[in-house]
Figure 1 (cartoon, rainbow, N blue to C red):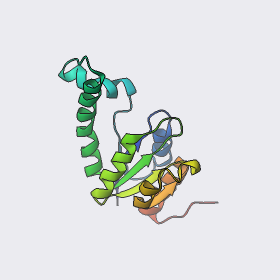
Figure 2 (cartoon, rainbow, N blue to C red):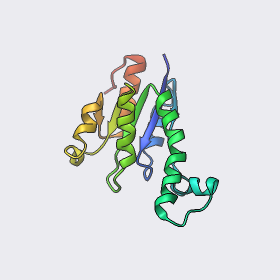
Figure 3 (tube, rainbow, N blue to C red):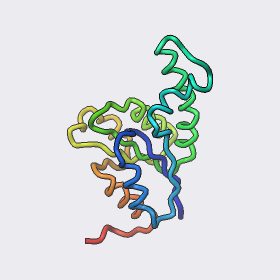
Figure 4 (spheres, rainbow, N blue to C red):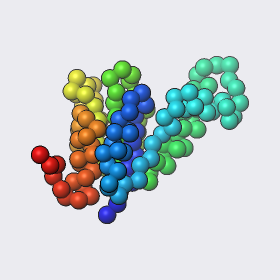
Length: 150
């Protein structure tokens, strides 16, 4: 068995790399949104032309990024959605909702103090974790049926 995993959400820490490194020995293909913040913000105007109004600048970028996001979530077997502590990831909440609507298996990666704010997102998830290592162990268990050692 192999898995296609989409890593959605917060882009300011190395959580994606931690998961990829921890799962390097597993048959998993990873995909994610563009994690270069400037490129993600400016892709729409860079490709489609400048906008004077910040709303339309952001709108163009969001629409172009949505092409990649939708494709990645649609192709995924598992969607991991990370909510970071410093920034509010509204796009991550959208991604979780979209994945849930498609019937995808969702793992949420969030902090304990976010429990109340994310209760609806957590309700749609099959697992709620606090550390990237827990995500790796879930993926390992799904693929190998092995429990963590130690």
